[in-house]
Length: 124
Image 1 (cartoon, rainbow, N blue to C red):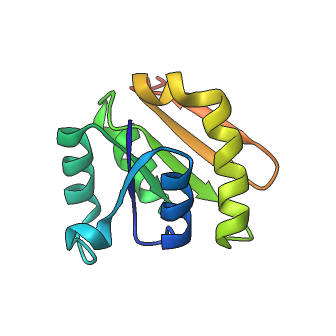
Image 2: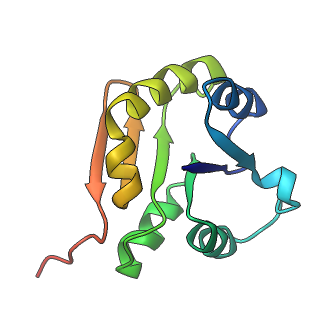
């Protein structure tokens, strides 16, 4: 599993993930600093990346798309410092690797995280 860190994700978190043995690349490393969300999603789909982001738009786009991948971890934390992000991400990764491989949106807040399996079924 390879993670794709969006612009709001700190290089400190990228380094921390690498220290934990995960493959991760930052959009900055790909020259995609100003890339549209749709371009980042397209890349993540093609390369089977899991997106790490603070941008809620990614979840909205995936929910509307009906697609099963890419998986996305969306941080909704009041404290966005890397040490806090890393602590929450550590908990998510301990329990959710399988879900991320199958296709999911994980929303992480200050107290917990929520898993929504993809594709998201439209309610009538």
